[in-house]
Image (tube, rainbow, N blue to C red; front, top):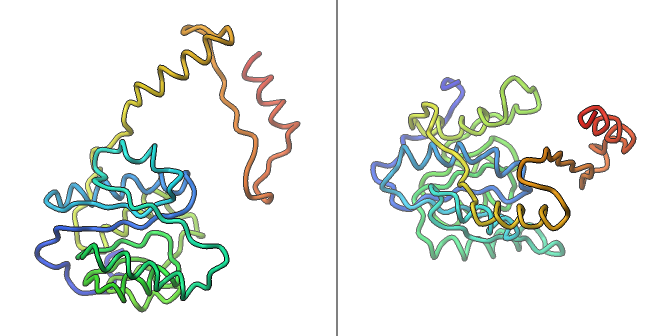
Length: 220
């Protein structure tokens, strides 16, 4: 709640805002409502998203994101080196506000060294470098992930009232998929079951045989 938030009031005028979420597609998509809420509360501000470059083709069509700043860390670099490199990039942009959605020491240090006056995120991994901090209690599972992310915007004292947001229509991509399915004998009226049975985290891997059972149950 608001009683747990710490930080100074948001500056009166924000013209350049930065949202940082650099990991996988799922976590990034679950932050889209928070980005929409930020844009709705600060319509005069240009919103830049620091994100994995592989997601850029999808995210560049999101209407409330004005710009994608591709970011991919060097896996062999020290985190401090990474922070300094990112600081140089951010300093040129002259952001007035930074929302750090995935807490990392390199991000917290970079937004501080870049001179961004308002910095919101979580009170861990050098969270003391932020001006507005929230406890990172997502592991408790008391709220949906989208709601946890919206709390970052509330921590700035900005209104969050079910922001109107939706994914773009992706008409061109839908047409390409329809053509691909048609070449394999799948018509527009046919029922399609999409299955993604793999994960990059072995601990999250569901047994393949259970996927088979689910597919049979749905198809039957």
